[in-house]
Amino acid sequence: MLASILFPSFVALTALAASPDDWRTRSIYQLVTDRFATPDGSSPTCNTDDRRYCGGNYKGVINKLDYIQSMGFDAIWISPVVANVEGNTAYGEAFHGYWTQDINKLNDHFGSADDLKSLSDAVHKRNMYLMVDVVVNHMVATSNPPNFGSFEPFNQQSDYHSFCFIQASDYDNNQTAVEQCWLGDENLPLADINTEDPNIVSTWNSWISGLVKNYTFDGVRIDTVKHVRKDFWPEFAKSAESLSAALDYPAYFALTTGFQTTNGNLSTLAAVVQSGQSVYDNGEHYMGSFLENHDNPRFQSLTQDQALVKNAMTWPFVQDGIPVLYYGQEQGYTGGNDPANREALWLSGYGEDKPLVQHVKTLNAARKAAASTNKDFYTSSLKFLVDSTNNLAISKPPMLTLLTNEGSTSTPQWNVPNAGYSANQELIDVLTCTKVNADANGGVSIKGSGGNPQVLLPTSALAKGGSVCPDAATGAQASSARSLTVQVLGSSLAIVLSLLVAFS
Image (tube, rainbow, N blue to C red; front, side, top):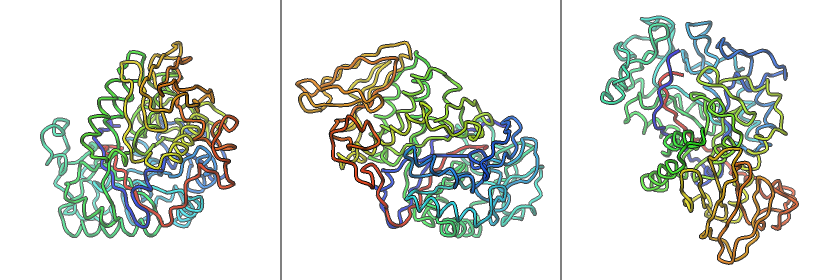
Protein backbone atom coordinates (compact mmCIF):
# COMPACT_ATOMS: atom_id res chain seq x y z
CA MET A 1 0.00 0.00 0.00
CA LEU A 2 1.17 3.49 -0.72
CA ALA A 3 2.53 5.40 2.23
CA SER A 4 0.33 8.09 3.72
CA ILE A 5 1.25 11.67 2.87
CA LEU A 6 0.56 14.09 5.69
CA PHE A 7 -0.05 17.81 5.74
CA PRO A 8 -0.94 20.43 8.35
CA SER A 9 -4.58 19.86 9.18
CA PHE A 10 -7.70 21.94 8.78
CA VAL A 11 -10.47 21.78 11.34
CA ALA A 12 -13.88 23.35 11.65
CA LEU A 13 -15.85 23.51 14.87
CA THR A 14 -19.59 23.63 14.36
CA ALA A 15 -21.50 25.73 16.84
CA LEU A 16 -25.25 25.16 17.10
CA ALA A 17 -26.44 25.95 20.63
CA ALA A 18 -23.09 25.69 22.42
CA SER A 19 -20.13 27.94 21.70
CA PRO A 20 -16.61 27.04 20.57
CA ASP A 21 -15.56 27.79 24.14
CA ASP A 22 -17.51 24.72 25.24
CA TRP A 23 -15.49 22.53 22.86
CA ARG A 24 -12.30 23.56 24.63
CA THR A 25 -13.43 21.51 27.61
CA ARG A 26 -13.63 18.27 25.64
CA SER A 27 -11.16 15.44 25.15
CA ILE A 28 -11.52 13.05 22.21
CA TYR A 29 -11.05 9.27 21.98
CA GLN A 30 -10.38 8.24 18.37
CA LEU A 31 -11.18 4.68 17.35
CA VAL A 32 -11.28 2.48 14.24
CA THR A 33 -14.81 1.12 14.24
CA ASP A 34 -13.90 -2.32 12.88
CA ARG A 35 -11.13 -2.79 15.44
CA PHE A 36 -12.58 -1.40 18.68
CA ALA A 37 -15.21 -3.87 19.92
CA THR A 38 -17.34 -6.77 18.67
CA PRO A 39 -21.10 -6.76 19.30
CA ASP A 40 -21.12 -9.96 21.37
CA GLY A 41 -17.95 -9.32 23.34
CA SER A 42 -16.02 -12.04 21.53
CA SER A 43 -12.31 -11.75 20.74
CA PRO A 44 -11.72 -13.12 17.24
CA THR A 45 -8.25 -13.29 15.75
CA CYS A 46 -7.36 -10.10 13.89
CA ASN A 47 -4.10 -10.11 11.93
CA THR A 48 -3.37 -6.54 10.86
CA ASP A 49 -1.24 -7.77 7.95
CA ASP A 50 -4.33 -9.38 6.40
CA ARG A 51 -6.08 -6.02 6.06
CA ARG A 52 -9.47 -7.68 6.48
CA TYR A 53 -12.63 -6.82 8.40
CA CYS A 54 -12.32 -8.21 11.93
CA GLY A 55 -15.87 -7.72 13.20
CA GLY A 56 -16.02 -4.52 15.23
CA ASN A 57 -19.18 -2.42 14.80
CA TYR A 58 -21.47 0.22 16.30
CA LYS A 59 -23.09 -2.20 18.75
CA GLY A 60 -19.63 -3.07 19.99
CA VAL A 61 -18.83 0.59 20.58
CA ILE A 62 -22.09 1.04 22.51
CA ASN A 63 -21.20 -1.89 24.75
CA LYS A 64 -17.81 -0.35 25.57
CA LEU A 65 -18.84 3.25 26.21
CA ASP A 66 -18.23 2.71 29.92
CA TYR A 67 -14.61 1.90 29.11
CA ILE A 68 -14.16 5.15 27.16
CA GLN A 69 -16.01 7.36 29.59
CA SER A 70 -14.28 5.87 32.63
CA MET A 71 -11.00 7.30 31.30
CA GLY A 72 -12.55 10.77 31.25
CA PHE A 73 -13.19 11.16 27.55
CA ASP A 74 -16.31 13.08 26.56
CA ALA A 75 -16.09 12.88 22.76
CA ILE A 76 -15.63 9.90 20.43
CA TRP A 77 -14.27 9.94 16.86
CA ILE A 78 -15.36 6.99 14.70
CA SER A 79 -14.44 5.77 11.19
CA PRO A 80 -16.24 6.88 8.00
CA VAL A 81 -19.73 5.40 7.85
CA VAL A 82 -20.57 5.28 4.12
CA ALA A 83 -20.52 2.27 1.77
CA ASN A 84 -17.03 1.29 0.63
CA VAL A 85 -15.37 -0.97 -1.92
CA GLU A 86 -16.52 -4.54 -1.26
CA GLY A 87 -14.33 -7.62 -1.30
CA ASN A 88 -10.58 -8.03 -1.35
CA THR A 89 -8.32 -5.68 -3.30
CA ALA A 90 -4.60 -5.44 -3.94
CA TYR A 91 -4.42 -3.72 -0.54
CA GLY A 92 -6.94 -5.78 1.39
CA GLU A 93 -10.47 -4.89 2.42
CA ALA A 94 -11.91 -1.48 3.26
CA PHE A 95 -12.19 -2.20 7.00
CA HIS A 96 -10.98 1.34 7.79
CA GLY A 97 -13.85 2.96 5.91
CA TYR A 98 -11.89 5.35 3.69
CA TRP A 99 -12.52 3.73 0.27
CA THR A 100 -15.86 5.37 -0.55
CA GLN A 101 -18.11 4.11 -3.36
CA ASP A 102 -21.60 5.29 -2.35
CA ILE A 103 -22.14 8.24 -0.03
CA ASN A 104 -25.89 7.59 0.14
CA LYS A 105 -25.55 4.14 1.72
CA LEU A 106 -23.96 3.03 4.96
CA ASN A 107 -21.16 0.50 5.35
CA ASP A 108 -23.21 -2.43 6.62
CA HIS A 109 -20.12 -4.14 8.02
CA PHE A 110 -20.41 -1.59 10.83
CA GLY A 111 -24.16 -1.98 11.31
CA SER A 112 -27.48 -0.57 10.14
CA ALA A 113 -28.79 2.99 10.16
CA ASP A 114 -30.69 2.15 13.34
CA ASP A 115 -27.48 0.84 14.92
CA LEU A 116 -25.70 4.09 14.10
CA LYS A 117 -28.56 6.13 15.50
CA SER A 118 -28.50 3.98 18.62
CA LEU A 119 -24.80 4.73 19.02
CA SER A 120 -25.45 8.44 18.67
CA ASP A 121 -28.28 8.27 21.19
CA ALA A 122 -26.18 6.28 23.66
CA VAL A 123 -23.30 8.73 23.40
CA HIS A 124 -25.54 11.75 23.91
CA LYS A 125 -27.28 10.21 26.92
CA ARG A 126 -23.85 10.29 28.54
CA ASN A 127 -23.42 13.96 27.62
CA MET A 128 -20.65 12.99 25.21
CA TYR A 129 -20.11 14.06 21.60
CA LEU A 130 -19.83 11.86 18.50
CA MET A 131 -17.54 12.72 15.59
CA VAL A 132 -17.41 10.97 12.22
CA ASP A 133 -14.92 10.85 9.35
CA VAL A 134 -15.89 11.82 5.79
CA VAL A 135 -14.05 11.70 2.46
CA VAL A 136 -14.93 14.42 -0.05
CA ASN A 137 -11.98 14.40 -2.45
CA HIS A 138 -12.42 11.08 -4.24
CA MET A 139 -14.14 7.77 -4.86
CA VAL A 140 -12.15 4.52 -4.88
CA ALA A 141 -11.98 2.02 -7.72
CA THR A 142 -10.37 -1.39 -8.10
CA SER A 143 -9.22 -0.89 -11.67
CA ASN A 144 -7.94 1.85 -13.95
CA PRO A 145 -9.86 3.24 -15.73
CA PRO A 146 -12.57 2.96 -13.06
CA ASN A 147 -16.09 1.72 -13.58
CA PHE A 148 -17.64 5.12 -12.96
CA GLY A 149 -21.10 3.57 -12.92
CA SER A 150 -20.23 1.80 -9.66
CA PHE A 151 -20.04 5.14 -7.81
CA GLU A 152 -22.97 7.01 -6.30
CA PRO A 153 -24.09 9.72 -6.70
CA PHE A 154 -21.17 10.80 -8.92
CA ASN A 155 -21.50 8.06 -11.53
CA GLN A 156 -20.38 9.79 -14.72
CA GLN A 157 -16.81 10.19 -15.95
CA SER A 158 -17.48 13.91 -16.30
CA ASP A 159 -17.94 14.07 -12.53
CA TYR A 160 -14.19 13.57 -12.15
CA HIS A 161 -11.01 15.39 -13.03
CA SER A 162 -9.13 14.02 -16.02
CA PHE A 163 -6.84 11.16 -15.07
CA CYS A 164 -3.29 11.89 -13.90
CA PHE A 165 -1.53 10.63 -10.78
CA ILE A 166 -0.10 13.15 -8.33
CA GLN A 167 3.68 13.09 -8.27
CA ALA A 168 5.68 13.51 -5.05
CA SER A 169 7.25 16.72 -6.37
CA ASP A 170 3.79 18.26 -6.88
CA TYR A 171 3.37 18.81 -3.15
CA ASP A 172 6.22 21.32 -3.20
CA ASN A 173 5.37 23.36 -6.27
CA ASN A 174 2.16 22.31 -8.05
CA GLN A 175 -0.98 22.80 -5.98
CA THR A 176 -3.14 22.54 -9.11
CA ALA A 177 -1.92 18.98 -9.62
CA VAL A 178 -2.48 18.23 -5.94
CA GLU A 179 -6.09 19.35 -6.30
CA GLN A 180 -6.93 17.91 -9.73
CA CYS A 181 -4.78 14.81 -10.21
CA TRP A 182 -5.49 11.47 -8.58
CA LEU A 183 -4.18 9.69 -5.51
CA GLY A 184 -3.61 5.94 -5.34
CA ASP A 185 -2.08 3.73 -8.04
CA GLU A 186 -3.07 1.44 -10.91
CA ASN A 187 -4.30 -1.21 -8.47
CA LEU A 188 -6.49 1.12 -6.44
CA PRO A 189 -6.98 4.50 -8.11
CA LEU A 190 -8.69 7.26 -6.13
CA ALA A 191 -10.84 8.98 -8.74
CA ASP A 192 -10.62 12.71 -8.04
CA ILE A 193 -14.05 14.34 -7.89
CA ASN A 194 -14.58 17.54 -9.88
CA THR A 195 -15.40 19.84 -6.98
CA GLU A 196 -15.44 22.83 -9.35
CA ASP A 197 -18.76 21.59 -10.77
CA PRO A 198 -21.57 23.60 -9.08
CA ASN A 199 -23.94 20.62 -9.15
CA ILE A 200 -21.39 18.46 -7.36
CA VAL A 201 -20.76 21.24 -4.85
CA SER A 202 -24.49 21.48 -4.18
CA THR A 203 -24.75 17.72 -3.73
CA TRP A 204 -21.90 17.64 -1.22
CA ASN A 205 -23.32 20.56 0.78
CA SER A 206 -26.76 18.97 0.99
CA TRP A 207 -25.24 15.62 1.88
CA ILE A 208 -23.11 16.83 4.79
CA SER A 209 -26.04 18.78 6.21
CA GLY A 210 -28.23 15.69 6.01
CA LEU A 211 -25.57 13.38 7.46
CA VAL A 212 -25.12 15.52 10.56
CA LYS A 213 -28.86 15.92 11.09
CA ASN A 214 -29.88 12.32 10.36
CA TYR A 215 -27.45 10.83 12.85
CA THR A 216 -27.09 13.86 15.14
CA PHE A 217 -23.33 13.81 14.75
CA ASP A 218 -21.53 16.33 16.87
CA GLY A 219 -18.44 16.26 14.72
CA VAL A 220 -17.12 15.61 11.24
CA ARG A 221 -13.48 15.01 10.37
CA ILE A 222 -12.64 15.59 6.70
CA ASP A 223 -10.03 13.52 4.89
CA THR A 224 -7.58 14.86 2.24
CA VAL A 225 -8.60 18.51 2.53
CA LYS A 226 -5.46 19.81 0.80
CA HIS A 227 -6.54 17.94 -2.33
CA VAL A 228 -9.67 20.04 -2.75
CA ARG A 229 -9.62 23.70 -3.78
CA LYS A 230 -9.71 26.06 -0.81
CA ASP A 231 -12.80 27.96 -1.90
CA PHE A 232 -14.85 24.74 -1.81
CA TRP A 233 -14.66 24.52 1.98
CA PRO A 234 -16.40 27.69 3.25
CA GLU A 235 -19.79 26.72 1.83
CA PHE A 236 -19.31 23.09 2.86
CA ALA A 237 -18.46 24.25 6.37
CA LYS A 238 -21.45 26.59 6.39
CA SER A 239 -23.68 23.63 5.59
CA ALA A 240 -22.39 22.11 8.81
CA GLU A 241 -22.43 25.52 10.54
CA SER A 242 -18.70 25.44 11.13
CA LEU A 243 -15.87 27.60 12.42
CA SER A 244 -12.22 27.06 11.50
CA ALA A 245 -9.51 25.63 13.73
CA ALA A 246 -6.65 23.12 13.28
CA LEU A 247 -5.05 19.84 14.30
CA ASP A 248 -1.61 20.39 15.74
CA TYR A 249 0.61 18.47 13.34
CA PRO A 250 3.60 20.81 13.76
CA ALA A 251 3.73 20.05 17.49
CA TYR A 252 3.14 16.33 16.79
CA PHE A 253 6.39 16.01 14.87
CA ALA A 254 8.36 17.94 17.50
CA LEU A 255 6.68 15.94 20.27
CA THR A 256 7.57 12.60 18.69
CA THR A 257 11.20 13.41 17.92
CA GLY A 258 11.65 15.11 21.29
CA PHE A 259 10.59 12.11 23.36
CA GLN A 260 11.30 9.02 21.25
CA THR A 261 14.92 8.87 22.48
CA THR A 262 16.96 10.35 25.30
CA ASN A 263 18.80 12.31 22.61
CA GLY A 264 15.72 14.30 21.61
CA ASN A 265 15.53 18.08 21.88
CA LEU A 266 12.55 19.37 23.84
CA SER A 267 13.48 22.96 23.01
CA THR A 268 12.22 22.26 19.50
CA LEU A 269 8.76 21.45 20.85
CA ALA A 270 8.77 24.67 22.87
CA ALA A 271 9.85 26.70 19.83
CA VAL A 272 7.11 25.19 17.64
CA VAL A 273 4.44 25.90 20.23
CA GLN A 274 5.60 29.46 20.83
CA SER A 275 5.68 30.10 17.09
CA GLY A 276 2.14 28.78 16.81
CA GLN A 277 0.94 31.02 19.61
CA SER A 278 2.15 34.04 17.67
CA VAL A 279 0.52 32.88 14.43
CA TYR A 280 -2.78 31.32 15.51
CA ASP A 281 -4.08 34.35 17.42
CA ASN A 282 -5.59 32.21 20.21
CA GLY A 283 -6.59 29.55 17.68
CA GLU A 284 -4.28 27.14 19.51
CA HIS A 285 -7.07 26.66 22.06
CA TYR A 286 -9.17 24.90 19.41
CA MET A 287 -6.36 22.72 18.08
CA GLY A 288 -6.47 18.95 18.44
CA SER A 289 -3.29 17.69 20.10
CA PHE A 290 -2.25 14.06 19.63
CA LEU A 291 0.64 11.61 19.92
CA GLU A 292 -0.78 8.80 17.76
CA ASN A 293 -3.32 8.30 14.99
CA HIS A 294 -4.29 5.79 12.32
CA ASP A 295 -1.85 7.13 9.72
CA ASN A 296 1.36 7.22 11.76
CA PRO A 297 3.31 4.56 13.63
CA ARG A 298 2.39 4.17 17.28
CA PHE A 299 4.77 5.88 19.66
CA GLN A 300 5.70 2.59 21.32
CA SER A 301 6.94 1.30 17.99
CA LEU A 302 9.62 3.99 18.36
CA THR A 303 10.49 3.47 22.03
CA GLN A 304 9.56 1.06 24.80
CA ASP A 305 10.95 3.26 27.58
CA GLN A 306 7.86 3.78 29.70
CA ALA A 307 9.14 7.02 31.19
CA LEU A 308 9.48 8.51 27.71
CA VAL A 309 6.05 7.13 26.82
CA LYS A 310 4.37 8.69 29.85
CA ASN A 311 6.06 12.04 29.28
CA ALA A 312 4.99 12.15 25.63
CA MET A 313 1.43 11.02 26.44
CA THR A 314 1.14 13.77 29.04
CA TRP A 315 1.64 16.60 26.53
CA PRO A 316 -1.79 16.54 24.77
CA PHE A 317 -3.55 16.88 28.13
CA VAL A 318 -1.56 19.85 29.44
CA GLN A 319 -1.23 22.02 26.33
CA ASP A 320 -3.66 24.69 25.14
CA GLY A 321 -5.83 22.71 22.74
CA ILE A 322 -8.16 19.69 22.72
CA PRO A 323 -6.58 16.32 23.67
CA VAL A 324 -7.05 13.48 21.16
CA LEU A 325 -6.07 9.93 22.11
CA TYR A 326 -5.93 7.13 19.53
CA TYR A 327 -7.48 3.89 20.77
CA GLY A 328 -4.99 1.28 22.00
CA GLN A 329 -2.41 3.81 23.10
CA GLU A 330 -3.70 3.44 26.63
CA GLN A 331 -3.21 -0.34 26.35
CA GLY A 332 0.41 0.00 25.30
CA TYR A 333 -0.04 -1.05 21.66
CA THR A 334 3.14 -1.02 19.60
CA GLY A 335 2.04 -1.27 15.95
CA GLY A 336 4.22 0.51 13.39
CA ASN A 337 3.06 1.99 10.10
CA ASP A 338 -0.35 1.24 8.59
CA PRO A 339 -1.73 -1.44 8.76
CA ALA A 340 0.17 -2.51 11.91
CA ASN A 341 -1.19 0.46 13.88
CA ARG A 342 -4.82 -0.61 13.41
CA GLU A 343 -4.93 -3.47 15.91
CA ALA A 344 -8.03 -5.04 17.47
CA LEU A 345 -8.55 -3.56 20.92
CA TRP A 346 -10.41 -6.64 22.18
CA LEU A 347 -7.11 -8.51 22.17
CA SER A 348 -6.05 -6.28 25.08
CA GLY A 349 -8.94 -7.38 27.26
CA TYR A 350 -9.81 -3.69 27.91
CA GLY A 351 -7.89 -3.83 31.18
CA GLU A 352 -8.62 -0.71 33.21
CA ASP A 353 -5.93 -1.30 35.82
CA LYS A 354 -3.06 -0.99 33.34
CA PRO A 355 -0.57 1.82 33.99
CA LEU A 356 -1.27 3.86 30.86
CA VAL A 357 -5.04 3.57 31.28
CA GLN A 358 -4.66 5.01 34.76
CA HIS A 359 -2.25 7.63 33.43
CA VAL A 360 -4.79 8.85 30.89
CA LYS A 361 -7.63 8.78 33.40
CA THR A 362 -5.65 10.94 35.80
CA LEU A 363 -4.61 13.40 33.10
CA ASN A 364 -8.20 13.90 31.93
CA ALA A 365 -9.36 14.44 35.49
CA ALA A 366 -6.48 16.81 36.29
CA ARG A 367 -7.33 18.94 33.27
CA LYS A 368 -10.91 19.28 34.51
CA ALA A 369 -9.73 20.00 38.04
CA ALA A 370 -7.45 22.79 36.84
CA ALA A 371 -10.31 24.33 34.89
CA SER A 372 -12.65 24.10 37.88
CA THR A 373 -10.45 26.53 39.83
CA ASN A 374 -9.46 28.83 36.96
CA LYS A 375 -12.25 30.00 34.70
CA ASP A 376 -9.63 31.12 32.16
CA PHE A 377 -7.79 27.79 32.05
CA TYR A 378 -9.07 26.83 28.60
CA THR A 379 -8.47 30.28 27.10
CA SER A 380 -5.14 31.24 28.66
CA SER A 381 -1.94 30.36 26.80
CA LEU A 382 0.68 28.12 28.37
CA LYS A 383 4.17 29.41 29.15
CA PHE A 384 7.46 27.52 29.22
CA LEU A 385 9.18 28.38 32.48
CA VAL A 386 11.96 25.87 31.81
CA ASP A 387 12.94 25.20 28.21
CA SER A 388 16.01 23.01 27.69
CA THR A 389 17.10 20.05 25.60
CA ASN A 390 16.01 17.53 28.22
CA ASN A 391 13.50 19.27 30.49
CA LEU A 392 10.39 21.41 30.23
CA ALA A 393 8.36 23.20 32.89
CA ILE A 394 5.00 24.20 31.45
CA SER A 395 2.79 26.65 33.30
CA LYS A 396 -0.94 26.76 32.64
CA PRO A 397 -2.26 28.00 35.99
CA PRO A 398 -3.03 26.43 38.32
CA MET A 399 -1.24 23.51 36.62
CA LEU A 400 2.52 23.16 36.40
CA THR A 401 3.74 20.25 34.27
CA LEU A 402 7.30 18.96 34.45
CA LEU A 403 8.43 16.85 31.49
CA THR A 404 11.76 15.17 30.73
CA ASN A 405 13.26 12.99 28.01
CA GLU A 406 16.10 11.68 30.15
CA GLY A 407 14.54 8.21 30.32
CA SER A 408 13.58 5.66 32.97
CA THR A 409 17.03 5.42 34.56
CA SER A 410 17.26 9.16 35.22
CA THR A 411 16.55 11.39 38.23
CA PRO A 412 15.64 14.69 36.55
CA GLN A 413 15.81 17.98 38.39
CA TRP A 414 13.49 20.93 37.79
CA ASN A 415 14.18 24.33 39.33
CA VAL A 416 11.33 26.73 38.62
CA PRO A 417 11.84 29.92 40.63
CA ASN A 418 8.94 31.77 38.98
CA ALA A 419 6.25 29.08 39.16
CA GLY A 420 3.59 31.59 40.22
CA TYR A 421 2.27 29.90 43.35
CA SER A 422 1.68 31.51 46.74
CA ALA A 423 4.43 31.37 49.33
CA ASN A 424 4.72 27.83 50.71
CA GLN A 425 1.54 26.76 48.90
CA GLU A 426 0.80 23.04 49.20
CA LEU A 427 0.93 21.28 45.82
CA ILE A 428 0.48 17.69 44.72
CA ASP A 429 1.78 15.65 41.81
CA VAL A 430 -1.48 14.12 40.60
CA LEU A 431 0.36 11.26 38.90
CA THR A 432 1.79 9.94 42.18
CA CYS A 433 -0.27 11.83 44.82
CA THR A 434 3.01 13.08 46.32
CA LYS A 435 2.80 16.44 48.05
CA VAL A 436 5.34 19.23 47.74
CA ASN A 437 5.36 22.82 48.94
CA ALA A 438 6.25 25.88 46.92
CA ASP A 439 9.08 27.94 48.40
CA ALA A 440 8.72 31.35 50.03
CA ASN A 441 8.70 33.00 46.60
CA GLY A 442 6.16 30.62 45.06
CA GLY A 443 8.81 28.71 43.15
CA VAL A 444 9.23 24.96 42.86
CA SER A 445 12.34 22.80 43.05
CA ILE A 446 11.79 19.09 42.51
CA LYS A 447 13.97 16.06 41.94
CA GLY A 448 12.20 13.43 39.88
CA SER A 449 12.38 9.65 39.93
CA GLY A 450 12.63 7.14 37.10
CA GLY A 451 12.40 9.85 34.48
CA ASN A 452 8.66 10.20 35.04
CA PRO A 453 6.62 13.34 34.35
CA GLN A 454 4.99 15.33 37.11
CA VAL A 455 1.75 17.31 36.94
CA LEU A 456 1.38 19.67 39.87
CA LEU A 457 -1.84 21.23 41.14
CA PRO A 458 -2.66 22.96 44.42
CA THR A 459 -4.25 20.44 46.77
CA SER A 460 -7.08 22.94 47.10
CA ALA A 461 -7.92 22.37 43.40
CA LEU A 462 -8.79 18.74 44.03
CA ALA A 463 -12.20 17.76 45.35
CA LYS A 464 -12.36 15.62 48.47
CA GLY A 465 -13.66 12.24 47.45
CA GLY A 466 -12.97 13.05 43.79
CA SER A 467 -11.15 10.87 41.28
CA VAL A 468 -7.73 12.51 41.67
CA CYS A 469 -5.75 11.80 44.86
CA PRO A 470 -8.96 11.83 46.96
CA ASP A 471 -7.16 11.26 50.26
CA ALA A 472 -4.83 14.21 49.75
CA ALA A 473 -7.33 16.70 48.33
CA THR A 474 -8.28 19.75 50.39
CA GLY A 475 -10.85 21.27 48.06
CA ALA A 476 -14.62 21.16 48.37
CA GLN A 477 -16.34 17.81 48.84
CA ALA A 478 -17.21 16.17 45.52
CA SER A 479 -20.95 16.17 44.90
CA SER A 480 -22.89 13.18 43.67
CA ALA A 481 -22.64 14.64 40.21
CA ARG A 482 -18.83 14.80 40.63
CA SER A 483 -17.09 18.13 40.44
CA LEU A 484 -14.97 16.92 37.50
CA THR A 485 -17.91 15.93 35.32
CA VAL A 486 -18.47 17.99 32.19
CA GLN A 487 -21.69 19.98 32.24
CA VAL A 488 -24.46 19.15 29.85
CA LEU A 489 -24.03 21.60 27.04
CA GLY A 490 -27.54 21.38 25.71
CA SER A 491 -27.79 20.94 21.98
CA SER A 492 -25.06 19.25 20.02
CA LEU A 493 -22.10 20.84 18.31
CA ALA A 494 -20.38 19.65 15.23
CA ILE A 495 -16.64 19.60 15.06
CA VAL A 496 -14.78 19.01 11.86
CA LEU A 497 -11.27 17.69 12.39
CA SER A 498 -9.63 17.47 9.00
CA LEU A 499 -6.56 15.30 8.87
CA LEU A 500 -4.91 15.53 5.49
CA VAL A 501 -3.84 12.14 4.21
CA ALA A 502 -3.28 11.23 0.64
CA PHE A 503 -4.07 7.57 1.04
CA SER A 504 -5.77 5.84 3.94
